[in-house]
Image (cartoon, rainbow, N blue to C red; front, side, top):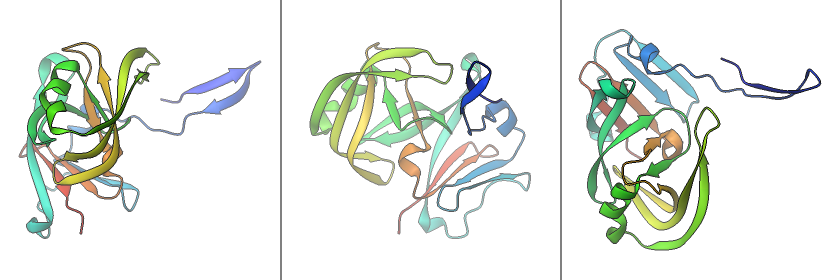
Length: 184
């Protein structure tokens, strides 16, 4: 797919992103997003086996057949295990109101303001934007983290590669494991 904005048939903006989608990725045994080297690896060589397991954390995931084969990862966020959809593109972290209420008491919120978030098709939703002093996701601590909070209790929520730009993330479809390489 290519997204392009034109005025009088003149291209003004062209999106450079590539959307592969989960149906494509599921054909592989594992998909590695090496954000440090800016590359992706699509492997048919069996389950992912880290070269040094001590440098990695793994979290189970399932595929929600009722929601477009969404990858639902059981991952610790602010000391609580949340089952949250993973999206390989997009922003950083969006929680629904119910999830936010689970973790809010464990956080120091520096700022909370009204905001909007836009999904891939251009639909915009009202939300709140919280700036957190320190947010833990898996083994990673993010300082001054921005979290979008959907106003709906069961509304859209997602986490993505946004907070993992300095490491490697692997979706192991054989073992249904979500791997994150720990920071050194």
